[in-house]
Length: 380
Image (tube, rainbow, N blue to C red):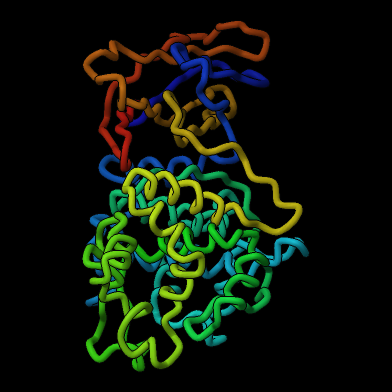
């Protein structure tokens, strides 16, 4: 069932929505499509963006391939060739042209980009979707909600190379992360936060492990600080810290973690500090963008949002028909407390002459949807 509002033709019309919160975003907004993909995930009219990463253990791309970890890695790899002083690169979607350059090993990047491509549109760039994927993967695995700003512009082709590799020495790592805009301390933080999920795979690193895959920490599907505490306690099985990597000079996590004598890692041993640090540093990671790109304010869910509104002329232009839905955020407002939602027709001069029709329509609930932290009722 859809909402129908019939009235005589006018040159312009305004939809007055009573009860919108003062702090609500202004509708319509250029971020409306991303807002819906981000928050309206499941159930009625759900966009289902997180289906392959929720729950965090989901291996939709194949056995041993934890999609949430692959989404998080994609964000870092796309960003990590940035040259911030020069204003080039960053999170710009250029990785889609660089999957065969030897720096982006494994099928995870291609699988993730293929999934996200179905959400691509003029209102949702691939680079914004990659950033949204970082938010969704972290949240799906119990991590903090990373603020998401929109407005990234997709690169037209391949960018620079320079993704950090396990065999690089610590001085090279410091130069690479400085190029991205990160301090030596932040280099350690973003590595720890990025490696709290997932595994190392033999298909990509056969010289490091003999099994098909080995977890970077013991809780590969929990966004927690075990990657830190197990390293500090000396009982880690992280293939980038212990094992054959040491003799091969590919123990990159060990070199990065220990680059300040473990000062930063000891601070991250506090789970509260780990979560707040990861929220901040991963937000910084997805906001490394080329010079000239202006990002929006953080996307917040509407309290009251029109969805799929369409205004059409019928019967030779004598009748104007409005169809669509009204989505109500019920996270902190029980649906039982919503008595009704009324749509009031106004023309551009504030008049309410609707001919044979009533200028006020009451919407009824058609279904409910939800995201990681929010619930909604959809009315028409």
